[in-house]
Image 1 (cartoon, rainbow, N blue to C red):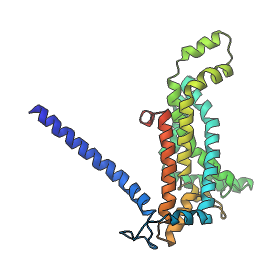
Image 2: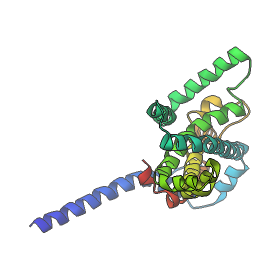
Image 3: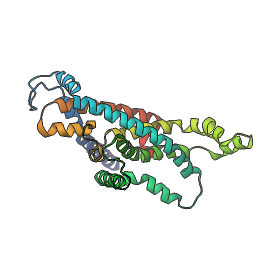
Image 4: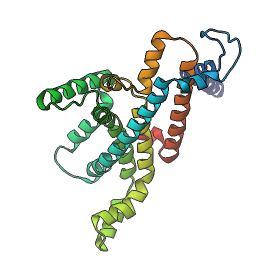
Length: 271
């Protein structure tokens, strides 16, 4: 009887898990599917299938330029997060100083603060800088990169820190006792060990920067727009499968990057 009960429980758990996963994935599957509809106005069932929406999306300057702006901004933000995140992670793991927990909380805070609140706060802060110095930051490429660096930095620190915790300090101490300097130890011993975390952190930082909408919508200039904002603007006046084509490209890119990330660091261990 207990065996039958356990079997029923297992089947119920499997069914429930499948329903939850299906609920999460079904909208994504439908978006990919509708990107191939031939209908001029999006409707169901489809009248046929075509790849023309992908061509149309690429030919539209808002989507094309938005993609390049998002890609460029995310790449630079990821580089900034890497430059700042590596020493910060090293200090948080190896350092013993007063206020370490506070510093860690502050560095992780962009992950906790609602994105729309963070975007509006950064926008107001940039306006204050402009009032005080006369230097325009809001609406400039510099301001957008600074905001996206704040998005990327916490993810970089979290994944690099996860990898750095696994490094045995005695190996570094042994190298130091043999005369190796701090830079030599870091680049020849520590960095090769934490390289998976660095790669995963870079990819995950890029993804979160690339898909950002809330901060970007406050900070883009009048003649520029990110891909996410271009999607919102298009949806305001149009309802066809062009949106599905653009979304499918994004889903494919992000899925690929997340699979690569999981190859280096199991994401389930990082959160």
